[in-house]
Amino acid sequence: MSYIEIKNLKKTFRTRGKENDVLKGIDLEVREGEIFGIIGFSGAGKSTLARCINRLEVCDSGTVKVGGVDILALNKSELLKERRKIGMVFQNFNLFDSRTVYKNIAYPLEIAHFPKSKIKERVLETAELVGLSDKLDAYPGGLSGGQKQRVGIARALVNKPELLISDEATSALDPQTTIQILDLLKEINQKSGITILMITHELDAIRYSCNRMAVLEGGKIIEKGTVADIFNNPQSRTGELFAKVFTEFQSISLTEGAGI
Amino acid sequence: MSLLDSSVWEVIKASFNPDIWRELVKPVGETVYMTVISSIIVLLFGIIVGIFLTITGPDGLLPLKIPYHASGWMINVLRSLPQMVTIILMIPVARLIFGKSYGTNACIIAIAASCIPMYARIVESSLLEIGKGKIEAAKSIGSNNFQIITKVIIPETFPSLIRGFTVAVISIISMTALAGMFGAGGIGDIAVRFGYQRFQHDRLFACVYILVILVQITQGTGNLISNRILKTRNLI
Ligand SMILES: Nc1ncnc2c1ncn2[C@@H]1O[C@H](COP(=O)(O)OP(=O)(O)OP(=O)(O)O)[C@@H](O)[C@H]1O
Ligand SMILES: [Mg+2]
Image 1: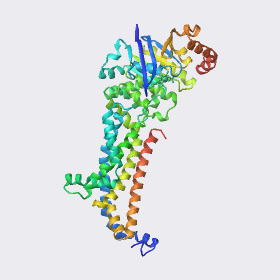
Image 2 (image 1 turned 30 degrees about the horizontal axis):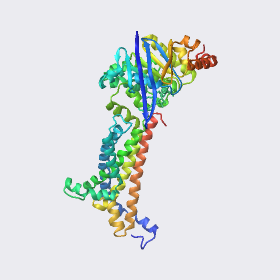
Image 3 (image 1 turned 90 degrees about the horizontal axis):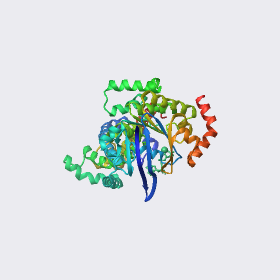
Image 4 (image 1 turned 90 degrees about the vertical axis):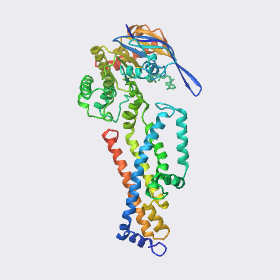
């Protein structure tokens, strides 16, 4: 069953009279419980696509359904509730510097008016899951990139969402930390069955984590299918380029980073 | 003692005469009173107007073109007036509220009218310092606008808000001195009455010391608090 269903999604940015067609009719289905990869070069429209899913960006036309809910039909308060079921992690972590790790993770529950005791229970549990139990009193300013992203993931997961959108979550991290974070995402996916949409320009990440993927280029999905198919038998120029680059670098980064 | 018939050194020595300082206790109290009350008013309204500007601005949480530009225009008008002109303009307003157009409380109105617009702009620029990504993250979690303002934007930019407030308090101090000329009492009143009208430069010097000390204390406290916060957050 598809968990995310996107049909003919279009988005045009207008800046100073100039039109920029960023998404030109995206069709995409992501199955429940899978880790689905979207790959594309910088400027391909990956972040815009991600932001259309939780309506941080309002698309011009098309439909977006998440877990059967028509995202575009929601009113304001329904949208806020729905967003609580969609976690999001970012390349720059976007943590709150004014809050400790504990308070960062607690934030989503705080704004959803959970009782204090429940918040504590959930935060401790989530911190344990991402391996941050000993950092709860630290401020994000004093953490490493990998630790920051763990906080980001914990914050995205603490309200038990059904979908996690990861927009370049590992792009600012070194290969070793990248693998650790990817392992964490995989583990979470297996444990809770959460659907993960992994957006990246890193082949390693997709190859390492995903079963199915899509290639985004020039605002269109130009290829989709299983990861193995696309890497072995790329149909598009981008797919080909990625596959080629990948084979060249595969041995270096993956084996070194993962120790495999 | 005057510079007209004594050397600078003698005037400086005289400016430390305990009699002069004893007479300054009351004016200093008036200045501090005016500064504190005005600062509280400016802080309150400046923050409110600053937040209003930030959220209704073009990239704000709730862009409202006409209210944003209208209030921006009002602020620019008020800010383009020299402080002395604002004081004169506020005389009828003060009379309306307090029944008299002079005195400490009347001048507080003039100070507020002049400093609120300035502090509102400082607040606006502080609040705009927050990274777009943090607001994005807060939105993606399902925060409403009120939560984004109170739980994210203000706490995140707090050190910068404090630094801005320090600037505002310092300009309030300097304006209380000016207001002294218009019957507000305080240090400014002494400086004008004795230093300017009677050439008693020893008293004028004492006033200068006090103003310098007040400004230093304000700046020092502001820096201390904002640095302390930044250090706690591991940002410096
Ligand atoms: N808010 C916006 N206003 C105007 N144009 C935008 C906006 N956001 C994105 N764009 C444009 O949309 C295009 C796609 O941007 P997007 O951020 O989706 O790309 P991306 O695939 O995520 O790239 P990257 O890998 O660099 O993150 C770019 O040309 C960008 O300039
Ligand atoms: Mg992007």
